[in-house]
Amino acid sequence: MKYMAVVVGALETNCYLAYCPETREAAIVDPGADHGRIFAAVAELELKPTMILNTHGHVDHIGANREMKNKYRVPLRIHKADAPMLTHVASIELSLLLGAEESPPADSYLKEGEAVAIGRHRLTVIHTPGHSPGSVSLFADSGSFLLSGDTLFFGGIGRTDLPGGSYKEIEHSITTKLLTLPDDLLVLPGHGPHTTIGQEKESNPFLS
Ligand SMILES: [Fe+2]
Image (cartoon, rainbow, N blue to C red; front, side):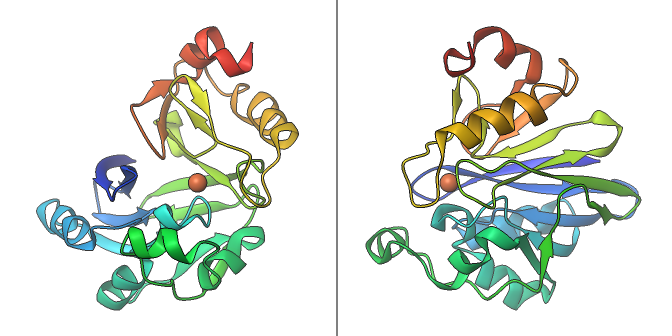
């Protein structure tokens, strides 16, 4: 599995194109805004999107779902616990500020442990609640990378003060489900620079 990051929107969300280098099939993960730049990246890499995935339902990760769906006509998937956020954007002011439109509803739900096929490769769903009830991380096959959404960042963890957030849960998710992955695993967060599991174990001030 390969990937390309496209930084989108006022909150600089990392939208990832996770793709199979053999078939060029791709998942568009967290198209938060700037749909034209995502279209351009898909075209530049000659990708064939087969699905839209949201690591969680916050507006800066879902804001361009509608444009992706209109253009590529592919299923939109999110964990069930965050699915209501797609069509009931919590902060209208924030979504106006970010120029985000309401998302279409989910076509199906991402489930814990599910292996989502993208061409000849797989993304395994790890339910990591805490930043939101339905936050997920996506583990690419052959241990190539982890898309950690807004759960684990370089030197930080996701905020837990938004509706449905829980510090206890995010701590539990990270320590039991992410820090148990290989130390050299590349971590690609929903915002900011990439890191590794080992690096965060060693120096993340929120996890010591
Ligand atoms: Fe978020």
